[in-house]
Structures are given as C-alpha cells and as structure tokens.
Amino acid sequence: MIDFRKIFQKSKNLTALGSSYIVSNAISAIFWLFLASILEVEQYGELGYLLAIVGTVGAFGLIGSNNTLIVYVAKGVKIQATIFFTTLIAGATLSIGLLVFTENIFISFYPLALIIFSVVIFDFLGRKAFLNYARYMITQRILMVIFALVFLEIWGINGIIFGYTLSLACLVPLVYKGFKEGKIDFKLLVERKHFILNSYGTHVLGIISINLDKLIIFPMYGALILGPYQLGFQIFIVIMILPQIVSQYILPHDASGSKNILLKKYTIIISGIITVLTIILSPILIPFIFPKYIEAIEIIQIMGLAVIPSALTLIFTSELLGNENSKSVIIGVIISITALILGIILLGEYFGLIGIAVTLVIARTLQCITLFILRRRMRT
Image (tube, rainbow, N blue to C red):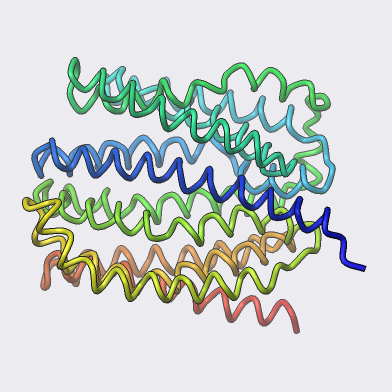
C-alpha cells in the first residue's frame, strides 16, 4: 500500500530545502549581479579576491564539521556540542590572526561569523530540519543585502564584506542551543578521527578549489581580468543551484541508506538542459544587462559545459561520504586543484580569459571521472 503521508513529507522537505536554496541563492546572485552593474570592473574583481581570501581562511576553522555534522547527526550521534566548541575556538583564532596579518578589521572577523553560521546550518541538515534551514538561509541573505548596501556607502568594498559578516552572525543565539545537544566529549571526535580528518581535508580542498582561481588570477593577471571572470563564475554558481539543492538533500539520506536514484537521474537531465540554455542565451542577455562585460559572454558559455560534470561530482561525493569514504573525495578534489593551478598558469598565459574558463571545465571533468572510477571500485 502506498504511504501518501510519507511521500508528502518527503516532498515537503525537498520543497522547503529547494525553495530556500533557490531563494537564498537568487538573492545572493541578484545582489552580486547588481554589484557588477554599480562597481567598476576592477573593483568587482578586487571584491572577489578579498572574499576568496576570507572564505578560504574560514574553511580551515570548520575542521570538517560540515559533513561530520550532517552524517553523524543523521545517524543519531550527539556530536554537536563538541563540534561547536572546537570550531568556535578555531574560528576565533583564525579571525584574530587575520586581523594581525591584514590590519583590516572590516574583513578579519568574517571567518568566525562564517563558522558560527555554518555549524548551525549543518546541524539543521543533519537533523533533516529543512524548514528551519530554509528560514535562516533566507533571513541571512536578506540581512546580507541590507547590511552590505548600507556599509558600502560608508566604507566601500570593505563595507560589503563587513555587511556579510554581520548577516552571518545572526545565528549566534542558536549556538547556545547546540551546546545543549549532549556534552563536550572529545572521545566522539577521536573515535571518528579518520572520517573527520578526511572530511576536513575534503572541505578545505573543496573551498580552495572554489577560491583558488581568484587567488591566482588577481596577483597574476590583475583585477581587470578577474572582474569578467568573476561575473562568469557567479552566473555558473546560479546555474548550479539545482544540483546543489539535490546534493544537500541526498547526503543525509545517503548516510541513512536511502539512495534517491530517480531524483539523481532527473538532476543530470535537467543539468544538460541548463547547459544548452546557458550557451544559447548568454550572447542575448549579457550585452543587454552588462554592457561593460561583453568579454564575459564566451566565458559563461564555456563554463556552462562544466555543469554536468559538476552535478555528477556532487552526486558521487554524496554517495561516497554517505558511506564514510571521504578519502576518495579528497583524491578527486586534489586532482581538480592540480588541474586548476596548471591550467590557469599555462592556458591563462597563452589564451587569456578563454584559457582560464576552459581550465574550469577540465578541472571539474577530471574530478568527476576520478570519483566515478573510485565509486565503482568501492562497489566491487
């Protein structure tokens, strides 16, 4: 007999997760596109570079808490208090270190705020509290826009990052609730050290792979090159919304044994349609909306080719992590990063922006192939 109530609940959870992810990322994307229209190309590139720095620093403070919380909370392990305590200490240390190193108070406490927000959000996902996840994700993005625009008028680009920081701090009160979920017990971390360390490496390398292009392009080629690339990458993030939604939904289900095979198949089909639409519509829309970024058209079209391998990578990653096989995920990320570094340096030198965009496609494709091979070996 069909359990319609169970089906409705699954649909409700996926709808909550999907709608919140779409709305929150739409807010972020529209805001970034708005910034592209009001900032000079060079300023836009510099802003992307600064956010890449603080985002990468923040990743080191999370200590693998993203997948650790999602997987083990889904399994019923009361690990929240221990993870919260560890990451808060790490985040505070990193933020103080960034302040000393950069002497820029506007960007220094972004890593700590990012960590506070992230651990609460990951806890929601692990508990499959998708409605709470939806509320706070959307609230944070709305606050981000308000604060960033207010402080942009006062402190310029630094004010935008300061606004981001304040919006992320909105979940500070919920950290206290997290400490009530059990007690601080480092044995919980020691017993799962291999998964946590691999998850830590996976997350750090994943963030590096997202930000590394900006961190290399800015010092090598300058903000005028990074600006159009940054616009193209932001649009790539927008068209990756659906695969990202699915990956966040299926990870706790993969961890608990539910495979969601049909959902994964539809995700790949829709990703292919998105790729075609990106290639067709870019020459039509970009000149009309962003006349300063005409050279970004080919960048966006090329990046669109990375959607399918990126979607497959997210699905393979979820399956591997659900089976606590984070080592294979790390190998895939390392291959992607290596390809990204070599491609930006070599192809960027000879082919400019086009070569850098092609590098992104190559790196994502190699990562996808690697995970596919390692996933098949795991099953045999």
